[in-house]
Image (cartoon, rainbow, N blue to C red):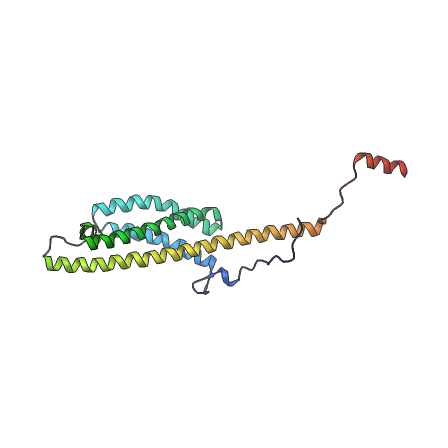
Length: 211
């Protein structure tokens, strides 16, 4: 296949391969994300041991799954293999949707006065639900605000991490396509894109007879 003249050459320093408002190359940004998600997972495990047994069990179960996902991400980023990025991208998209559902369910439970807020405050926020009503109401109000902020900020951070890893995926894809294109171009120029095939056996005999 001959090279086309209008093909844009690959430039790894192109601005589209930058993140953090153009201040960091996407390769470094992807490595930062891969390290951060693993560090945050470790912090989450430590944090869970200061909460109820329900939170500890849930955290341990989710961590066992996350280790595979984030470990695959870490390997894929460092070895620059696109295939190992897909589990993280798929997992994070689902996680963002779940966070949105939890946020809406939490807001609805506040509106209808369900016990979900109290249960979350006791298990996650370590709020003493047996305290006086005035103190309990104040603690629940603080927990509610912090929990909503946590979901919103956490969702935005997750979305940005997904964008960084997806951009890194596109960077690797463009680089691979550029390598294949350059190889085709080199092969075409070295051997000729329209090389004449050798004559068939009858034609070769006819040429020998004439000569």
